[in-house]
Amino acid sequence: MTEFENIVIGKRSVPALTITVILMLVIPAFFFIYWRRKHKEKTNISWLIAGAAGFLVSARVLELGVHYFCILQDNPVSRFINGNTVAFVFYGIIMAGVFEECGRYIVLKTIMKKNRTRENAVLYGIGHGGIEILAVLLPAMVLYLVVAILFSAGDTENALKTLNITEETAAAALPSVQAAAAFDDSMMALNIIERLLAMLVHIGLTVIVNYGVVSSRKLCLPIAIVLHMLADTFPALYQRGVLPLWAVEVWGAFWCIVIVSVAVRLYRHLRFSDADAAGCSV
Image 1 (cartoon, rainbow, N blue to C red):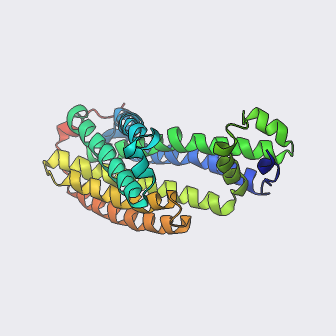
Image 2 (tube, one colour; image 1 turned 90 degrees about the vertical axis):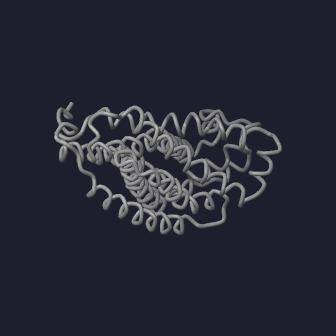
């Protein structure tokens, strides 16, 4: 497999990936610790857990189930979506917006009926965004780090054996190895900025959906879905190789500002009785 023998791991790949892995652990921990210490009497850990569980069920079970049929399986639907960039982008942003925001709404509306403080809504968003980092992105970064360490040792044959890369799996594994080799300080910065923006977006969207639940404003859910779809448009285009990563970050920052601005305004409008806020601390 000569294509692997020609791969050269950048001098900054291992340090940059190491720092990225550490920061991806720090980011959700920081958000949680900061918010919990600031609002201990008005928050309940169950909302953090509900946010994490809501994401896993809606995005990693139900949404992935649809992806299996529409993207992974070989059928007329998957061939059309995978073969058409416009269809792929629309499919991706609609699925993400509908499943994640409806998942938020269902959990907040039917399960999290107690302690509906606005502070708990933020904690739910931290759980949602935090588990996305820990369950989806962190494993990928750890894999990249392992790949970079193995190939930087200079023994390609041992690296391929350790990673269980064979002639049959080489084509599928090559992009991951190339990505690990090219990872540098700029990629580290972009990945960390993207995660910080995503955490704020998840918190903001949760506040918007929660406001709709508490105030019975039916428009809040479709607004959250549309905002989520808009925020995911450039990332979907990046997946298709249409846009560079820096454009995705600029787009993400813009919609993060929009979503957080709306959420802050709604957060300030929320009012709860003393009974709602009582006994939250756990």
